[in-house]
Length: 275
Length: 167
Image 1 (tube, rainbow over the protein chains, first blue to last red):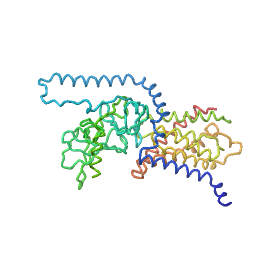
Image 2: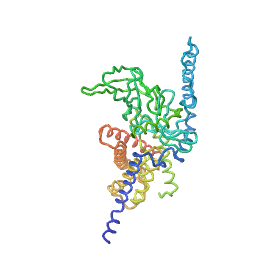
Image 3: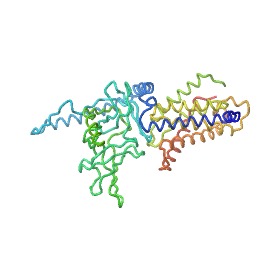
Image 4: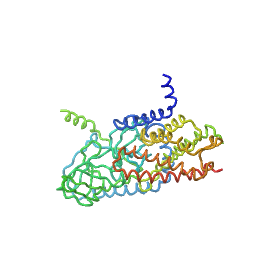
């Protein structure tokens, strides 16, 4: 017993070191398994508050740039409107948009963002109070941004597309072949699209868009353009590098995709898998 | 030379805010992210008890984690550095009257401080970057990123010495 106490006394710093490291690794692993540990998240009250306050200050300095972006966005939308109203014949078949079933966008502001980690996250200034829930997609004017993982009352955190833990289902808009698109962890402008069969003639500048298979995004939202294709000998699939259309280094306003049918689709898919 | 607890709380807050509001937004080519906050561990008094050092290291890391959605990652690296720091201090064979001092350039000279800070910053960054990717896959890419970031961290730590701790 005396030896034990002596041992504990002699190595108390080393033992404390081991205990703290064990605690850290437990936190890490728990977080990887199921996104719990909500208090260590940037949507918690204190860090959310600090980011929101700082962003309020910082956004004054980028007002000019944001204005320009909004003006360009407006001009694009207006020109699309002109081309619709200027069409000679209105399309005969009209799909009646049932307003309760349609996708909606909830505008939100990015108050924290990173591009230089392996696992990048965003913090948005909208939370559960505004109707944001986990598993909602996020888009901006140029393309897709990420997916919400956690919400608090007034803030939410999201996985950025630049997070190697996440991949999104994408397709080539010309040929409609689809596969998972994920980020490799280095260049914030390029992601990789896999599982495209080798017989598909992928060309540079082909557009890559969302497939619409998941409940996160509607079909056909731009992700980027093909910059490079590689087909290794003996493999059935080719690897496609995609230049992302979203500039993750310059995100200010985004839209959270609200899909009223998400729950129904997920429920149905779950029962089918279980059978 | 003795500073009150208020001074340390201020230093802690400044280091955290500098990190999460400024350093995390620095983007040199997307590869470099300086982790300046480690300065707090580096300049605690020379004779600080190892237990307090470890606990402060944990507190600092978990605070940074709370701001960057990385529970445990920064904390594990700061605890690691807090554990190694006494060995670096002991290696210096300090005189008794120097034991209550802060290990800064102003007190111990540029050469000593640079060696001390460089070793600890490099170890911190290696530990952090490898825990972050959690594999030795792409070893040299991770290695290179941690060295590059260490250089920038050391630069900012050196700069802070001339701004805050002038004699």
